[in-house]
Image (cartoon, rainbow, N blue to C red):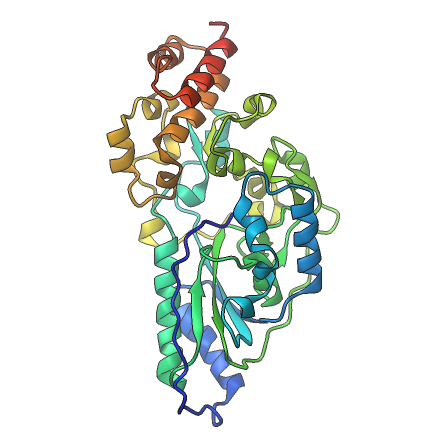
Length: 371
């Protein structure tokens, strides 16, 4: 899901510069080589022109209200499918993917143990936005060193761009039925970012889809959020509920969240392409597990003070939900945890929390344990 972060980089074309002598095919190959040298798993090039199918799909999704309270999705509207509205004169989009799956405790075993918290594997380390954009900036500067000034902007989940759609059009994979970009080599465990440029680069052909008749991601979604192939109702998605939703989590969905306190990986874990050889492990030190979050007891995380939350999760994607929602999410997980004196004691100690949101979810959790 897109954040509201609007940081990006713009380089203006020198009016006197000329690029008539550039071999664009050769440059495209160099860009891919430079990208891989910078640590990207793959780099591809897509046209910056909008896709009618993507626009129609986005409009239908918004009209159905499947974006929930993410008003910025509707506010940006079709701009997401039209990079030229972000970068005037844009001709192509250079898309890159970067693996994030860290060496961590087994995800399925973690999900199966209700005493422990489950955090989406992309969020176990440091936030990726700055790292990815800095890497894209280096790629942009390498291109500039080769051909001179040009217009570009670098994004990584930081602007209204249909990243998955453009990445699939750039040949980096295909859209799985869970809507994430899929590859045969690395499943879907990677971040996406792009350079929108005013360069007439040759575009790459899209990949053939390889989902076939498989519906594992649909049937394994804990809340049934994948309501049809390639259609997710965010209002039921655990990632939305634990990250984007600012208020109360719907009562009927709380038991289905289990021990997932930040995000959800179930649709990825169910995918045969993820299971086939396991996700490609990241080589980025910033994405390594911090503070033992891949195997942390719920009661221990619930005991963190606000100061501890801010200190330990500084620089983490989790930090942006704030302490109140952190406690809200853990309270729900504790309500779903096996009943024990430790769980009851942890909840009772938060039953008079200053936040009405936290108190409500703690009260619900205690009721789950007959208390």
